[in-house]
Length: 375
Image (cartoon, rainbow, N blue to C red; front, side):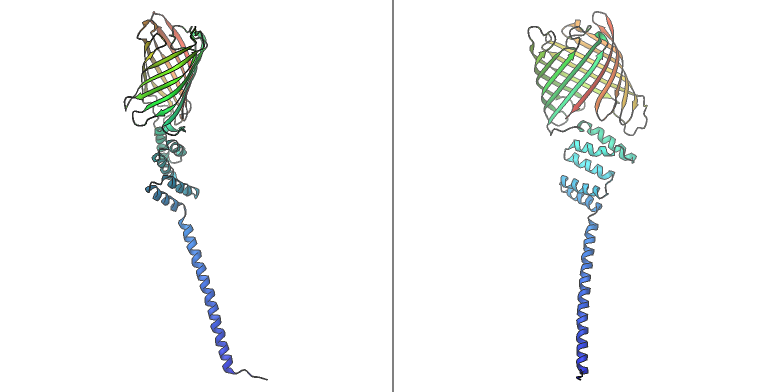
């Protein structure tokens, strides 16, 4: 039997110990490296939370990279870091980009916020941007459509008027607009409507070119002109088509009709005043010049962030400066309801007494539904 020498056993044991030490160290080192990597990954993920993307958004905003800033803030919202302030910041950034329609839609998200101050701020910003809420054509292009449908007791007459425009406009505080227009007017009693002049009730369609210019920065005073071609539908005579040129000045202003976003009073009974005046030349109607003015003092009897109801007295003058036989004046009362301030629909009822130049008078009850849209 061969015996192993003690020295050999000693060396083998030492070698095995050294080997095990190296293996254990290597395993421990690899484990430590993996732990470090996991910690680094966890730290990176932790950094890229909602707060990170909000700060990243502001970094991009300061560099005027507005689109990228909004994308960063959207990521923050997706991670649950959204709040009222961030929504206002996104809305303000859209304003800086001159994308007012998107700014309006962003701010409108807070119109029913649980925070009172946020609701007030959203309401005020929406009021300031209301004109652009449906804007879809890129600047400087625009389109709009005005529509009125109504009935009046004189001659039991129904009437419908519509006018659309498509054009280009300049900016600034005194803008100008050049536009193509289409106009359509229809009723069931043209030519036989009490003592009203023919300028008011016609059955015709027209297309043409128009221009207007705001003259004052703080008041809605415009000069305008339109030239077109008219197709008459009722009793046109030998000339079924006619050239049409009209133009003049138009002024309007209202007081106390804006909504007070801090108000909680649904029945304010607040004094309001609405005024309108125009001076217009018509080449088709004996080249007449007409002056019309209307003043409507009244009370705002109902008001919420959504709806308003106004009651008003009505006083109006209608003067043909070339033929006084066409003159008539009006006095009466009116109630006007706007069901939803988000949309330009109004329903009104008027009880008026018409006073004609020949000394006669006639009562007239009118119901009208009006709408205005802007793109």
